[in-house]
Image 1 (tube, helix red, strand yellow):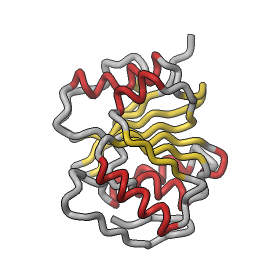
Image 2 (tube, rainbow, N blue to C red):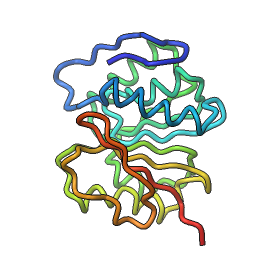
Image 3 (spheres, rainbow, N blue to C red):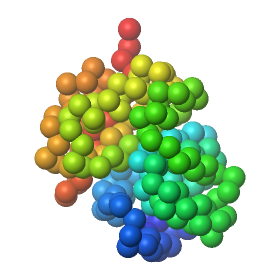
Image 4 (cartoon, rainbow, N blue to C red):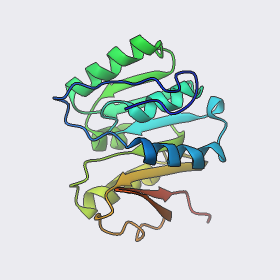
Length: 184
């Protein structure tokens, strides 16, 4: 895995082989950040990275100047790797890791974010995938102009049935479903 842009552009990070992760591919990540570059000034936003795994997406935001990033994963070893990498890249002020079940975190968390990224296991059921936007919008975790992106396999059932769904983009074996608040 490598950081695509920003202060640490080109920096390669090697995650331990025993982590139960599937990092977002460089091609998909680069395509995603090309979309986000046209939408955000990275220095001015807050980010919530759910099912953060290796922290791949969090490092990309921090490298681009985002100063408020929360990374949530339930795996102890993933959180340890994120903490180690944060120290190595000196992102202690930018990234705050939380060891927690994502669904429990979303039920209790009260802060709002400009951008939320969720990369759950690809073998989740449609119900599990749709629980993510449901909890985020029910608990008002996005700012009014905020964006939620859920990464999933092309084989995942259609997430467009959710009322906050706006579009789906496919990059190789990776799909991103985009969600926003709906106007009343």
